[in-house]
Amino acid sequence: MGTRMQRLPTFRSPIRGVWFTSVLASVLLIVLPIVTITGFISWAAYGPQFGQSMPGDVGWLRIPSFDWPTEPVWLYRLTQGLHVGLGLVMVPIVLAKLWSVIPKLIETPPVRSVAHLLERISLLALVGGILFEIITGVLNIQYDYIFGFSFYTAHYWGAWVFIAGFVAHVVLKFPTMVTALRTRPFLELMRIRVADTVPDADDESGLAATDPTPATISRRGALTLVGGSALFVAVLSVGQTTGGVLRSTAILLPRGRSYGNGPNDFQINRTAQSAGVTDAQTGDAWRLTVLAGGTEVMLSRAQLEQMDMHTVELPISCVEGWSTVQTWTGVRLRDLAAVAGIDAVDTGEVRSLEPVGSFNRVTFGGHQMMHPDSLLALRVNGADLSLDHGYPARIMMPAIPGVHATKWIESVEFFGENA
Ligand SMILES: Nc1nc2c(c(=O)[nH]1)N[C@H]1C(S)=C(S)[C@@H](COP(=O)(O)O)O[C@H]1N2
Ligand SMILES: [Mo]
Image (cartoon, rainbow, N blue to C red):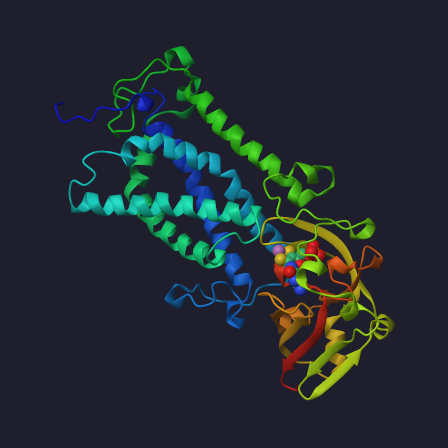
């Protein structure tokens, strides 16, 4: 007993223990892989094979690239909604889990053996990694690029640090978690009232308070509090996807709170003015340049309006977590390919009038360019696009990340065999 660490008063809650930690761990064991995998999916959706994922050069930590599908149209809306949404919802659970293991995190002596040192390093990667990912992720959806470094690069490498810590931790602790949940019946522990709440007698995890104070909350109360906080975060975020009256309640993802009017009343990511796109460029003098091989065709907006019009409902699914479904009308990109005299398209590149920025040009796969719902959109909800939503023309394609729905299109180029 002599070397037994004396616990600080804050670590004397009787609900602490391997069961409480394991319940939280079992939730995170499901949520964290979903958040992680959907994050990498987002990286893949940007098109690493076209050199436009961020970060671009990731060495051997590159996940296999594949053609990002066009179906279902809500695919990116789902994966990125899960990434940002669950990423926010898990925050109270992560904090509760950290609270429950604090005695372990600051245990003394900090290192007892080589095995223990490795475990400590994995914990550092795990805790440091997840906090870093949460902080950078939340800052990115809250503010415009406030980092002194690339958010994408930091968030990508931070994810790998987290994964290393997470995998090591799961390997080391999974049996403990399973045993804790198996040997202690969930409902029985949930039924214990505040007055009867004491640490489990047989808790050898080092997590339980050795010198507990009288309980001020039951295990059920604490888990309800954590679950309620997670639910509260979910309620505060859902307006980013539903729109309508809930829009003003979505206070956790407030980046770019600017909206258009009438049929154009939905979130504007970046206004024409801030993108440096002028009235002169988008006025009567505007021409769309369609390129394929040696062919170059210039089309005015009036000429585009003479072509076959198609109307389709498609979402804008922003990487920052908001999304909105609108009804778009315009010319099919495949019809533009035909105008330029090409029918077998390998890839295509669209370019914006916007002079700078990481996505003033985007490359798409042939399957995306030639999809019947892939449009050079001229109108939204029956009205002309507003300048801020991309007038005179923007890209709308099924299942793409919102960032690729390029506004103020200047040219569309097709690459393929007969081009
Ligand atoms: N030229 C250009 N196109 C752009 C952007 C931009 O900044 N410049 N932002 C993109 C991003 S990140 C999103 S989410 C959508 C948002 O479209 P909206 O502003 O019409 O809602 O446009 C995309 N197209
Ligand atoms: Mo976006």
